[in-house]
Every structure is written in C-alpha cells, then in structure tokens.
Figure 1 (tube, rainbow, N blue to C red):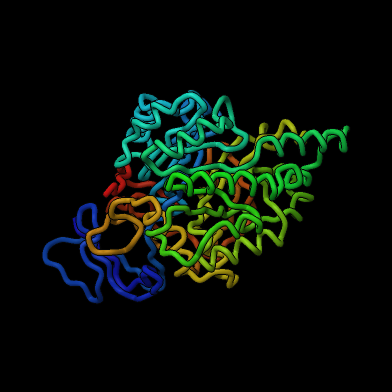
Figure 2: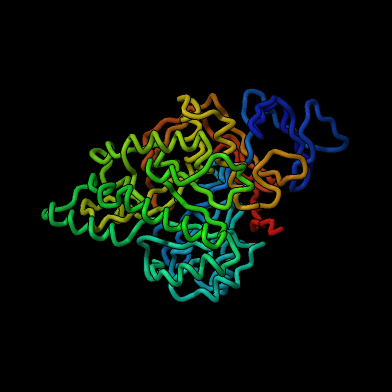
Length: 445
C-alpha cells in the first residue's frame, strides 16, 4: 500500500523544505506539496517533525561469525535500525576472518537471513591473499579493507611488496586503517618502562599518537597516487592528518577520500581521567586541538563522511582496569544520529551539512545505487525525527548485545520516531515492525 508522509520538514541536498513524500512499494515515488493519489494509502502526519534519508554507516564491526559473545548481525543491525542507520558496511576482522570469496558469500548469507537493514561486507586483505582480492565482485561488495596497523590474527598487512601489488592490482575501492605498527610498538614499550605498575588510559593517545597515524596515512596516499588507486582512509583522528586531504575537488571526482567518526568528534583526551579505558579505541581519541581540527576539516570538506566504527566488547572485556588487557573499541551505531543532532543543536554543524556527511556522501563515495537522498526513484530509506521529544540513553533501551554504551545517562533533545527501509516502515517509537533489508548494490560504471 502507498504511504504519504505529510507536511514534514524534508532535509535533502543541502536544503530544508516542508513538503509531502509519497512512498510506493520500495521507492520514493514523489516529493511535492499536497500530493493526491487514488485508491488506498496510509497517511503519516509529519507536522513538526524532520525527515532525512537513512544513515549509511561505512564502518561497523558486528562480530559475526566467531565473536558472537560480543555481538552479532541480528542484534547490532536492530540497534542500527533503532538509531536511523538503514545501511551499513561491515568489517572482516571476525573469526574466521573474511579473507576469501567463499567466506564473504557466507557472511552475505548471514546478512540475508538476520540483518534488519541493508548490508554489505568488506573483503579483508592479508599478506597472502592477493589472488582472492582480485576476484572481488565490485557490483555487490563495498571494497577491500587493509589494516595498515594493529589488527587481530594475520590481518596486519605489513609487507611493502604486497601492499604495492594490492594498490596496483585490486579493482575495488580500498579502505584502510592507518597506524604505523613499528611506532606504536616502540611507544608501547616506552610506556611499559615509564609505568611499571600499570599504564593509565591517558597514555593511549601518546602510544598511538598523531605521528603513528600520519606516517601510515601518508604512506597509503603515496601508494594510491602511484597507482591511481581508489583509496578511502577510515577514522581520521589528528590535526596533522587533515592536511593530507583536499577540499577543492567534488566528492564524485576524488580518488582519495576520508572518514571521521562520531566519537572523535565528541570525546577528547581530557576525558580519559573520568571514562578511562571505556573510551579506548584505535586509532586513539586525541586532544581537544585535534578534535577542533577534525571539525574544521569536516566542515570545509577535507573530511568527507561521518561514521561510527561501531566496535562492541563485553563489559568484562571493556571495563578491565588493566590497559593492556582492555579491548579497544566503542559501541555507537544506535546513537550516532542523535549524537550528531545534538551537535546541530549546539551549533557545531547545520542539519543540512550533517545529512550530507552521514547520508549523501557515503552514497556518492561508494557509488551506492539509488540510496542516500530523498529523491524520486530512489529507495525509500527514511528516518522520521521528533525534535521535541527527549531521549536518555540507559540500560533499559540499549540494544547492543554487549549491553553498555559510553553515552549512558546522556539525554538527547531529539528522538527517532520511525524508520523506513526499502519503503517498509520497520521501526516506530521503540517497536520493530516488518523488516525488508536488501544487499547493497554499487554502480561500477
């Protein structure tokens, strides 16, 4: 049945306009004022509310297969849905690691059976799987992920000959985690010597400092320039790195792009004293000056998209006081939109720019087919926001399998009213409804 969202403030393509949106089957049929249709339809009153495209999060860790004591695709995709994330791209550092086409297809089958929202999975690089990477289907896979810094198992790619060949021969977008492993190791040994009775959490951004990030990011960019590779560098954290990226090229023409994550825009190193290892993540949350530089680079289009790097761990794994034992990563996908709407409320960013960075630009950057905009003919991935209903994060409403959030007891001034995925209203006021996810498709032309 057709659905009409009436008199809603539509935020799209850097404009905000009160209008109607007609949904028919999976897609947006019309965006116009005072839409009239024949036959049966459902009408939704959007007066006083905001409608945006569904969030596309290009970096999440849902931990399946093999690490499902922390999370799984079923639980985390429902948390994503409740937070207005209608599409995600998930990472390969699971068990077994997603480093073959066979394992990638097995993961897509898990997504088909269990995901609540649209999905795609990265194929992971190692020092030994170049031939598998070259087989990637670029129409149905978001890209290849390279850990050019610490990772689990054998996913650290540190063979310079192999890196050169990957950048030269792999046909897909390459996404990188960039930290110089040798510098991180040497800084860690220095910290062990300096703090023999236990390394405090506040040392994390000193161990994993801006130089470690810059050395690796600049190396990746040099390789991309050498081979004209389509490179996307994930989770930029330092002022020093922001100078590596350009703002004078339209996004659809850029060969080298970048991402910033919500936690690096929200937390800074002064909070290690209170939150301690709870905000330990790789690459590290750095200084307030670094954070200010990230905001500047985001607003002037050096940094292209906002994502989460959603990385859940159990309470036991995360709240260990021993720095060396505490796992790195934060669960964020359920609250990223509300967190950024709070930044809109604070005047850090306009809502139009926020939508550009969380919805439009991920679709452009990855060439996602017919998503990321409220546009006639596009899939109806939509989020209806109530700007007048407070929402407080607490144990009772956290949907992550790990059961905790670094944002607990935070009150947001916006709540997620309803979410549509492929034209199906899948979430409304705390309730999950009919689910209609699809595997993401990418334009390879």
